[in-house]
Structures are given as C-alpha cells and as structure tokens.
Image (cartoon, rainbow, N blue to C red; front, side):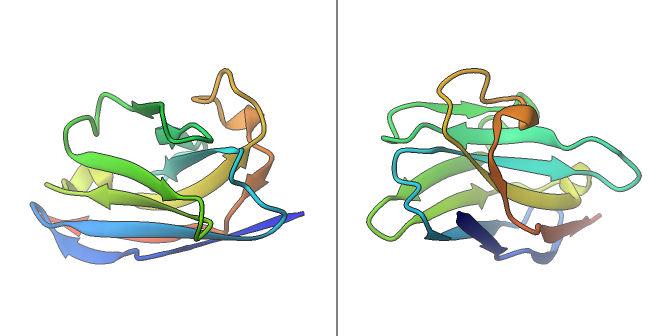
Length: 125
C-alpha cells in the first residue's frame, strides 16, 4: 500500500505563489508516475494539472497552467512538488496528489492507483 499526504495549500492573493508537496510512505513510488489533479468548487470531476514520469524525464502540464506551474520529484525523499506561480482565482480548487504504476494515459484520473486526501488552494482576486 501507498499513502500520499499533500501539504502546502492555503489562501493567496492573485499573482502570488504556493508550493504544494506530496509525501509518500509505505511502498516505494520511485518508479510510479505522479500526478497532480484538482477539483474546482462545484465541479464533480477532478482534472489533470500536471504529471511527471517515474524517472522524472517526462512532464505534462494542462494548458491552463503551462508556464506558471512546475512539477518536480525527489525520489530519494519520496516527494513530489508543484510550484505554482502567478496564481489566478480560477486556480482555486482542492489539489490532489496521485500515483500511477502505468506509463500511458497519465492525464486520466482512472489510471492512478493511489490518491491523497487533497489540500485546499484558494486564490483571492
């Protein structure tokens, strides 16, 4: 089993920055792809924000965050981070960290095996 715990959420003004962290414990996730999803207020679905491959060589960003967010991982520390800059009110959401043992279709939440509980990010205008 893998446990994922997110941290770093909070309230920030538009234009500000936050760094989310996801710590894993239990089974090692160094070979897992790690993704960040978010669920906006009133929305049922979680949408992909970014993911990073197990070895860190590949990354993906949703168009809405490209150029503003940066994903990284430290396999020695079993952590993955999401640096979020130039935040906008529309970035307000609960952000979830997830781990997938698969190598394809990583933008889809259905391929992720483990999920954290989420951390709230609120961006005020």
